[in-house]
Every structure is written in C-alpha cells, then in structure tokens.
Amino acid sequence: MDELPRYAITLPGPSGSHGPPEVVLVQPTGEVTADGHPVYADDAGRLRVEIIGDVARPLTAGPGPGRHTCLHATALP
Image (cartoon, rainbow, N blue to C red; front, side, top):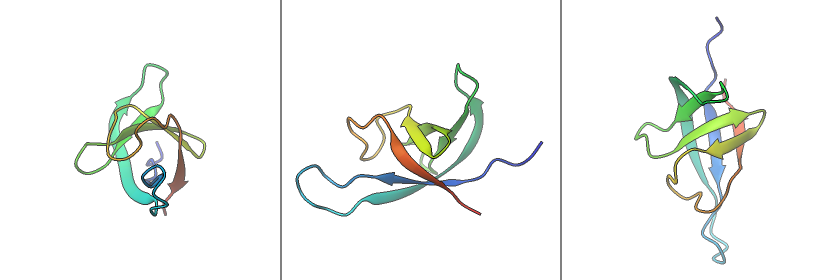
C-alpha cells in the first residue's frame, strides 16, 4: 500500500483582524473515519482532520479553525 502524504492545512486568521493565516502540518494517524477516510493530525494532536481532495474537514475544534467546517489542504512531497 502506498504511503499517505503529509498535508499543510491553512487556518484562517482571526475574524475581523486581517491577521495572516496559520499553516499547520498534519500527518496520517493510522485511524479512519466512519466513512473510511484517513484521519490526519498535527504533532500535538490538537488539530484532527479528514482530507478529501484538497479539503480538510476538522474532526476537533483544534487551533484556529473555530466555526470553519472546511479548510484548504495541500499535499506535501
């Protein structure tokens, strides 16, 4: 089986502050969601997401995503 890629997840800056976005690196945890998608997490485990295409859907509140239900995900080499 091919190794799953790591991803860079872009979290928007604070609402209304025009602050820069935050980029968080996530890697596969070995877990899967109920729908069978791999679960990815940052090193601290604070941000857990499932990734479908180039969209990351938060599974936890994590750092920064707040009310956002989908975030941009970029596969890393």
